[in-house]
Image 1 (cartoon, rainbow, N blue to C red):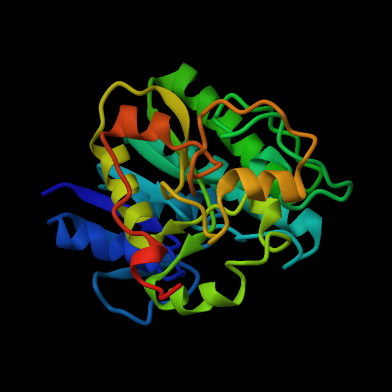
Image 2 (cartoon, one colour):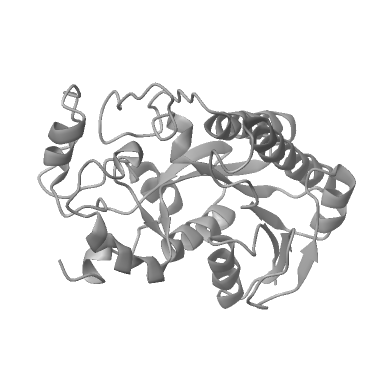
Length: 282
């Protein structure tokens, strides 16, 4: 049985990642700063900004899924967010390299493109926005995700370690679908995330498939549902909120996602299963 360490396994998404790996038969250790409300596997309280503690926590693992982070801008002072997210990721990768762990999955973010927390708002250069779209953050959170992806590339060059950075869209647990009627007809809401979302269960399966994949090197992948989070068609959303964007790289005839997930589908053989439209009466 393969052992996977999930950092941040007590968090909102981390709990679903832990649950999924346990259900798939993995030996799982949750590493976090607090115990999980669900005791699905052993937990260890660890400060990932301490390299020695990180080494100890990862010892014996076959793979690491690194979810632990300050999860958004404006929760802590920007320098705290940057230091925590960058140093914890560096330490996880450094410890994994030293311990001979060959596979790591990192939680990156759509915020790395910069639109989400921009001080000076701007729109996408084209849609659907794929992984080749420029990353232009104006905030320390988005910058931390860009730095972490570059750190992953460095460790891959140095050690050959496979590191898959998942640029997660807005993560939605099933109980949050009841909130969708409050915003699904308001294009001004959620425009900063291009109206994207991803079910926690689909994000968890992407983590597992990224661990099980082979020969990916260091790669970043958008993880989003196939549709937007809105009842309004995608072209109408763009016309209402980003009329300056004229570069459409897909037909967009309905409610298609504006955060492209095609690369993840191709490289991971992954496909999102859960849609809010099947959970909410429109």
